[in-house]
Length: 415
Ligand SMILES: Nc1ncnc2c1ncn2[C@@H]1O[C@H](COP(=O)(O)OP(=O)(O)OP(=O)(O)O)[C@@H](O)[C@H]1O
Ligand SMILES: [Mg+2]
Image 1 (cartoon, rainbow, N blue to C red):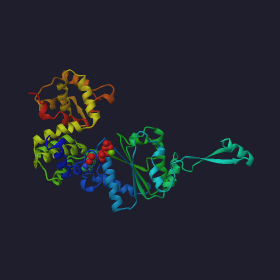
Image 2: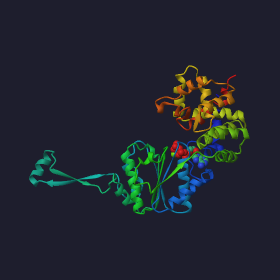
Image 3: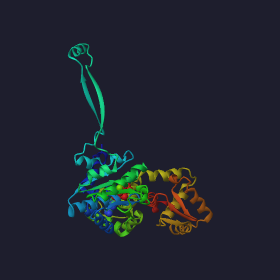
């Protein structure tokens, strides 16, 4: 049997290099030495946390860096400005309003485990009867039950606000978009309003995926003045470049300029993809004892990155391509559209990209036939959406990066 059992040598080499603590595509950042860009957003968050009665709603596309911004800024505030407590909760579809604040409530000594107590009142009969009953193995006590409502009223925003108002703390409530019930979102908004009215030091940061802030508060009006919105946009190319270069420097690898430019281009402002591709490049370089990362390593890294990409992206592309006769034609179309580098693109721009990338003149009839095949009526099942006449955008904003990773230009260009 080979001495490198199950690739153990490579695994150990990679582990020893520490690269997985530098490039972290699946873990949010919580320290400033690994955090780049976002200066304006960090400043705004610090100033809002420091303003009485203000809470924060941080929202944006999936994977733009919302949790990293929130966690890194909170850890900075709590280390440098205000020595309060920090609680964080990631919501999931099982959560309801009453399950959101258990940790800080328990911290202040509130018993949240029982919502009602049944008190048994024992009524004992006369002694002779007891003896007989005991002999007969019967219960001699009659019980009458009274239900006392526990003082913990986890369903009431006002009750919770009153309990927590004195706690000097930042509470980060992440993945708020997974709360399905509109009433729960309204209660959350009422709680924030109540904390604000009470001038509480208990600060809430809501984080979630949304196109507009009102998606996350279910349009509740009363909260608007005290919940300040921060929409997180994609990162600048320059900041993505910093993630690549700083990380590579830390592990003593040198990507050539062309590789850096390509990773910046593919990432399209999503730090997740920059981390993912860099991690794969670095792992190959470590395994093969190379210091310089050249295009050949990048090509291999993109193959690994495609396999490691999120299932929903892979599935939606596979599902469409499976139903199509000439998938290669559609791959080229998707690649041309992904290279338009814009949220909304026109079909005429796709035509020019086609020519530029593949030197193919595509007729407008062919183009519109293919575009409409990729634009399903059921939006959740579609790769593209039609945003206007001759205008399209990708349904999932991360799709252009995924397409560039999966249909890596240098492999797919027709002969
Ligand atoms: N400012 C940054 N500097 C460096 N890396 C970052 C930065 N922001 C995010 N990242 C990286 O990008 C990845 C995605 O970030 P994060 O998890 O914070 O995004 P998100 O918007 O919360 O994603 P989701 O919508 O899936 O919850 C993380 O793995 C993190 O390593
Ligand atoms: Mg997140």
